[in-house]
Length: 79
Image (cartoon, rainbow, N blue to C red; front, side, top):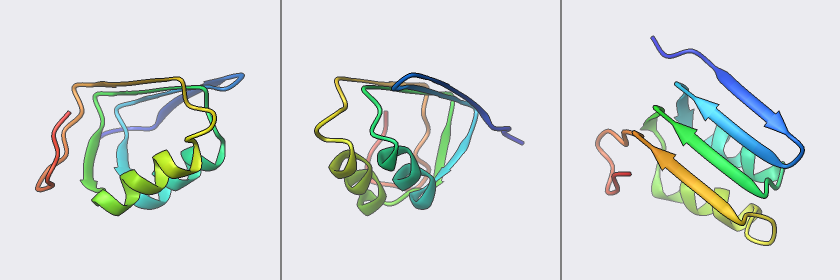
């Protein structure tokens, strides 16, 4: 089972070993990070709409986005 490991420093958010969902991505977007790293996360419950909403909400603030070993099971995208 994946556990939640989130580190926020200023406007930098690092998420490790988290099961992501659309609502969780929206919450990250609302925080408007300048840097976002998703590391070893699973996106079983993420839809393309959730990803679009994340980037729509933080479009003005996000400068760096890193996806490392992220698995989007059953979705149309792989990172």
